[in-house]
Length: 164
Image 1 (cartoon, rainbow, N blue to C red):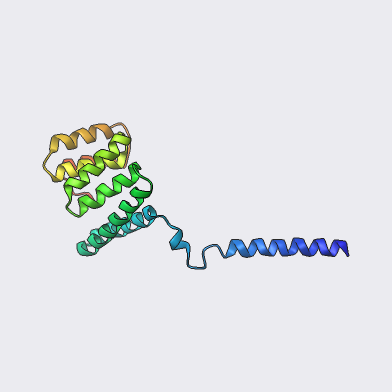
Image 2 (image 1 turned 120 degrees about the horizontal axis):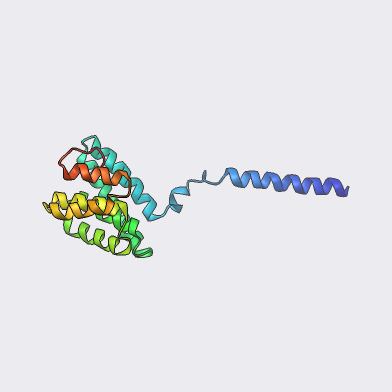
């Protein structure tokens, strides 16, 4: 009798573990668990796709929503270079170069070699006709052996680049 009872306890325990593992995200609450930052990154990636397809207005709506989420994220966890990078990116895409530059420079003060910030700040400098400053950002990236270097180099040279 004792063996049967122990076997049943083990069986119910296993069934409970299987049920708990299988029901992890099916309740619809998974989206609620995602951070503001993660939600913003998803919107940015979607905005980039829209922009690539020529749907600029749709992209801007996504960037506006993403920026609001990033500001919220930065309030909760201030001064994260990746967050500041995307705050700069979305601001730049929305034409707010002044705030974009502030976010990028704050991010660089925390992480001077951040590849994304250096690339995007360089792109901002190209867009605002400050070629010498764009070249400075390129110099920071020159030994990284990364796509950010190649993309910024092409933008500085005036070539069309598919990445946003």
